[in-house]
Image: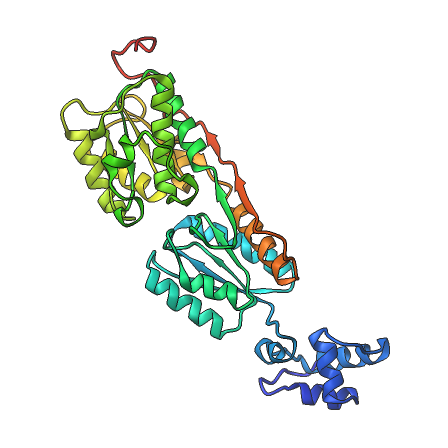
Length: 367
């Protein structure tokens, strides 16, 4: 029967109980070097009896590994990151690793601080949703130090690191194709489209050149899908229907949605560019007393809990799978994989739940 654990139990005490040297106990419990089967059994039995818990940082001084992954999420309150972190944690735990979760709040400075903290904790690798897409010297410094970095959800230009993303453009295109097929010709998009990332909206929309899609923020990639669908159908886009919220805020999305819905010649359908935008959009729809899909068709990006019972058609991202893939990549790198950077692109699925209908009084066959 194990004795009551004391927080002061050390590897020295384990070694004394097992009748071995401290170095031998360290090798057995640290999983490095050679020890005979008989010595390993004695050390592990002594550790169990004392309820010994290894100090990962101390072991890291010897092995160079702490068996921890550092995760920098853009917004831990966002359900997207909560689900991704669950996938990361599931893989890490199954491989004997822990995960230290930090948050950047979409701030480059806070991301830099989080990375520095995790470096001080001597994590073995990083999974980061980068705040800056046009250069992150602090992440390049991490890679130069010998620690692997895996980007999740976004890509930073010029960073030699693995990534796991979703084909945002294709998923958004499918959403708008469905709305166009139902007869809608005035489809508004409510999206974050932060200026610091995307640049000038009018130039972006009017550009005849193919933009560098991979290094665009997901909200801009989804706008491209919106534009693709219109162009393929030969339907012109009214710039007044492209509504830029400029921040991740449901309250701001609500105000933008109210503005477009209360204006002249309002849209007959809305496409909300992410979960936060969707929440604000639904608040505006409720405030105006509109019925979906009788008065207004609606498609959202990101599957939040309320969407299934509200009957909202939405893009379901494989978020847990993204976390799993990111964790598998970083653990492979920690284990010595030095192959060229891998860029994993997963496909999202459209869950149709009945929030799309033909616009009232419009012939769906007309152009």
